[in-house]
Image (tube, rainbow, N blue to C red; front, side, top):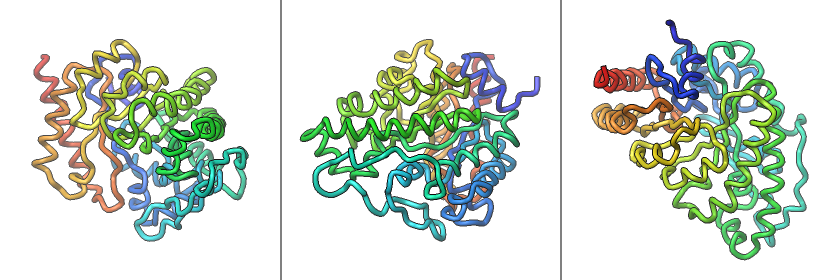
Length: 351
């Protein structure tokens, strides 16, 4: 059998044997580098955003393609956050929090619709172009800021944490609005046939504690995931963040996440025991800075540790954190070669 990335990922989700574990680097602004463009320019043009994703796929032949550049900004910008321009190698980022001063007043927010004043429709257009070209070969995902991370961009992290303790009802009201926009955007993207990545790095431990995660992150992620799962047959919704995701595994299960990230230090044995037969894919991630810097000995040790931890897993995929703009393509290809070599070594143990 000749495995296409689509077949490989479908089999992994089903818990079936595959020829090798899938390989999924996190390519966002790095795609702009492949076009010789700035991240800001690519982030504001649907054709360029689509071309960045497809060019990366042609070069790397990774097993899951993600469409997006500034992965936390689309929804926050639509709500009113101002952004930097993303000139040069920099990524567009929030420069002001529209709800940042005074008391939290979420009633000031209205749910935006796609228009020329925002990029809600632009990323949907880019996703449509990518699926039209390569959707029969590979899973295609679209980037979204998660409801909690949107709330941080709107209010500011320290102010939002204070609000959680001093005015939790206002925070829930804010999250109702960010989750509603997330549901609308997730359904807009899922209708194209894309999976959705909910990026929630502002909810990473130890930035917040597990009780905050349970009460202010899980219910709103679950609302988005349930809306997608009830209406669409797409690749499974993912919740992506760094940190010690093992400590949050029960919450990811409650939310219904189908794919989560875990770095090489994560306690895989604990995660596997908690996940059981649930169809949840674990993406084991190495440090992308090591790839950028060419620290091959350290990277090999990291890859070997991941391979040992994942031995015998069916729902495991290779990955890394966000690949930088400056990472040479040949370095990312070397990471792929190293990961697949480790994959083969592990598999030979079971033959």
